[in-house]
Image (cartoon, rainbow, N blue to C red; front, side, top):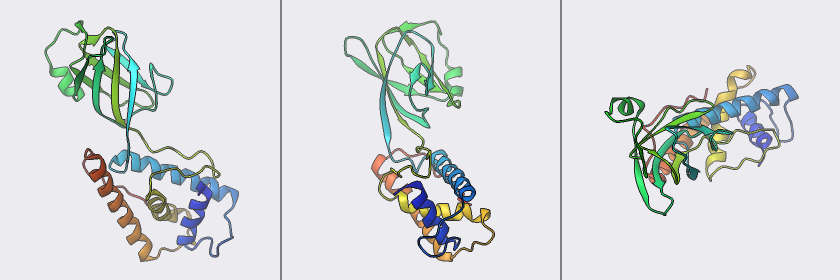
Length: 224
């Protein structure tokens, strides 16, 4: 399924396209793609709709702060939330790192110049588009292994294939229909669409919580 296929399904749910085979205008499709990506961003921000924890490793150099994001010192997709961390020394020994808030990090009484083989605590400001990660003590070598939630991938074009975990195509179809309705005054909403949109959100959130066991507190996603 491509992004256009999903958009067409959503538009049919609100009665904009009618019969299968009809298409929207170029301008309408462009607007639909923007709304679809906004929906994906909202789902990512809610976090319980993120279905995978990504494991990455980055080199340590003795710095107290590392940038994390596309093109940054730690070059990867900016994390939505870091869930776990471990420092691996050059001889292969590893030690877990406690993840704390910035407020907790700032309150700790410590020598900020301290260097060690391992870090004991980590905090991330989740800045956008580049996050900043602070470690203490500062490991002079080795690597850090990070487990984090990443945002759902944005869709580049109408021809982009929808590549998410099972169940997400249905979630996106129904919730996209709700999200795009205000853009089409001629559209109308069947109550079954609203009901199914809510059901898909609830079922995927519950599945991710069961599968990962480490989701964020529930956050309401407004699809319209």
